[in-house]
Length: 368
Image: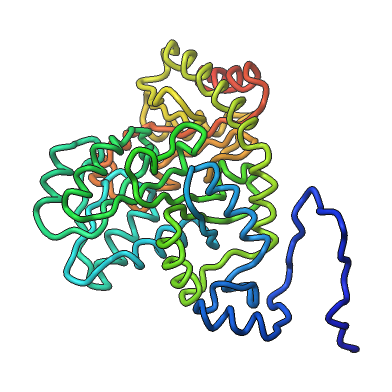
């Protein structure tokens, strides 16, 4: 095969409306590139896509703008974003204080993996400010970690208060904003230091890509990028393009999904088959508890025809899951109770279907 000339390719006078997919592992080098690479630890130039890629950068820039951040970094998944952030910030001899109500795989990282690496992890009830204060003040703490909206309880974290407690102790607050999204809240503006996302969810919005994101000040993002390079959790260019494309309809999708969620909540609260409804007042996520426990919840879920039984969330389609056997399947009955995941709980991620059609589907499933 003949090697293409370095000038090969289409070079336009005008810019494309949609950013190109730079599906290239490597880039041509010259003397200027070498100097830039060597002067900036390989971070100042596009030369190898594990370090940086123009399409990935385009998606990161969109997310940074949404969150009101100086910079953002894309990763191969939401868990890559969380794990890379925590491993970068953790210090020997200092602890992480984390909310007990977190995503199941995040919990596994906190209670299984980090302690195995020698890090001390203390978990507290996300809604208990006194518990936060006591735990943070009890011993030297590096990181405080919580979710804006707990998964799947949808309980709000008092971000500003927890941030103040963390900063007073010399710790940084990391917030997972996947559920709430920057459509409803920007944790950095409330005092959080770093925000992580599963961009798989509402940010991309079409259930067709796995991706993560971290937003923070530029210096922190550069340090995190170094860890992504060495740990290998970089995002592929085509996946980044799918995230970028989904972000173009982010606000429109969230308008519709939130409107549907509010209407669904009103009807659920009046439904005799529903024992409790959990909804923070904004956003597209709704959790509710049906009478009859987990078996009844499964039966209701299996009768849905518009909503789809599937894990994950944030797509244009409404997705429903039972946390006890999906996102939190690894928890014991006592651990589920401690996390306030009640028997009979269903978690809905509202999509953009016709609102009345979706609500009628939920009501027929409950009635059956």
